Every structure is written in structure tokens, then in C-alpha cells.
Figure (cartoon, each protein chain N blue to C red):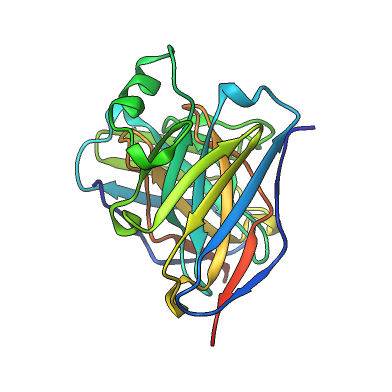
Length: 108
Length: 134
């Protein structure tokens, strides 16, 4: 199974700042099938990015994804108050899907 | 309106089984797979398995079919190693069921279903909270 690690574990930022979240896979992810999700307390996850760099429907363009192979990045430009929460990467290049442990984006 | 509807909270005793429904509506059911993902209190997301339709389709689906679990019944399912032998995913009409046996307190979690068709899990159910306690 492909293991995913995320860094940092916690990211402390102020509104308006840029956040860079990293996701590293234990082996190359086929077709760069990596997705990013945002989750807020009491809610299910929300898809932000799929196939490493494609924004999901209705996702603001301040969210962007990049990367290939084993290293992937989610960038949040000009953080808005509603962007604070947990972020998970997930790979679906393998028939066995896996999630990363998550990065918490908190207000500084 | 595209929706995945899940059942209300459940309490189970250790050793019991649970069978959770995920009812899909508002889209062509056959066009998507259904994942099951759980989240223990204060923890991250844990993928449990995926249910998908048989039949002709993209190489993506054929790859899944090649790894079919014979216990999946009327469709094709692939399970995380951790749950092999304890989980079964089946389908009836536009509802996918996830059955988990031999419950322990470590199975206390919110169980989500989520739709997927090669572009990430784009629609999620609201989740079912399951508490396992004697």
C-alpha cells in the first residue's frame, strides 16, 4: 500500500498569508492521482483538488495543487478566515486508496 | 440534487455487527463507485474500501474488477487490508451497504460514504456515528 506523509503537522497562519502544505508518497502515485480535502469540525471532508492540480467544482482559485511522482503540494493563497481547518491528501492511483494523516491550518 | 444519504447514529455492543446504508440519488448511480471512509474521535480519515460496478468500462474499472473480492456479491469491492475478513460491501438498487463484523471499541467512529469516478471523492454523505460500548 502507498503510505502518505503530510507536513507540517500544524501550520499557524494569519488571514491574508500564504500556506504551503506538503504530501509525500512512499512510492510514485500512478497518473498523479492525488486529491486534497478540507475538513471542518462536525462536517464531512470537502474535495478541493483532484489529479494533483485540478480544482474541484466551486473551489476558489486561491487553492492550487501541484506536484508529481511522490511529492505533492497544496497552496492556499491569501488565506481567508473560512480556510482554517484540517487538510488531508489522498491517493487513488492504486486500487487501495490511502489518506495522509492531515495538516491542521490554525490561526496564528 | 446529488446526494448520499446515510442512516442515523447507532450504538453497538462489542462483538456485534453493523450494516450501514448509503443511498445515492440525483445522479446516474452506475457511473460512480462508492468509497467507505471512517474517522475515529479526534483522528484522521481512514479508507475502508470501495464498491464499484462490474462490466465494460475504463481501464480504471477493469483494474478494480481484476482485484475483485469474491465476498462482494452483486458488485466488485476492494477492501483495505486492515478490514479484510471483517467488512463486506454490497449493493441493492441505488444503495450501497457496508457491513462490519466483530465490533470492538476501536470501531467507534464516524462512518462516511463518498462517491468517486476517477476525480477524487467529490460527494460525501453526512456520516453515521457509531459507538461501540458494553
